[in-house]
Length: 190
Ligand SMILES: C[S@@+](CC[C@H](N)C(=O)[O-])C[C@H]1O[C@@H](n2cnc3c(N)ncnc32)[C@H](O)[C@@H]1O
Image (cartoon, rainbow, N blue to C red; front, side, top):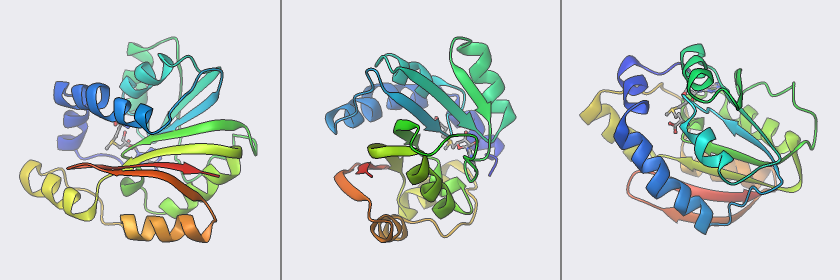
């Protein structure tokens, strides 16, 4: 779903950039993120700073998609060399089966009403033994953002327990999981 105005502004802020650059990317790197020569899809790319960081790892190809045209327009303006699509992540039908080595998500599934469908689509587009690097807040973290910053997250049934149950039902393997104060980070393998 579209972000509230407060969360949209926060996603463009310097603290968000610093967190992504100096905390989340190094954490994913320490968990095995390696994109050199790989075909990469980023779900919920926002205004493109993740694209900038991910492309420093020299992927063979990169596509970022986001539901919000406002985000994608910013991304295209800031990073004209990268490919961005306005696209709902519940439908990845434009990507062929087994066409991506790595899918990356920086905090998006908790915004998607049918997030299980997105996971199932990611499984389809990943190559055998492809990887999903995923970070998401816990329910309590979402409450903190909504109480203190009035971000107004959508009411979905997303939660880490439900996520892990769905991954297990689809026989995906959690290779690595790291708890941090506001985000939980996963390396998941097909
Ligand atoms: C919390 S923001 C994170 C943005 C960016 N990944 C970052 O870390 O700064 C969540 C992003 O997911 C996008 N989003 C929400 N629902 C979506 C959907 N169904 N399909 C694709 N993107 C979606 C929003 O537009 C927003 O850009």
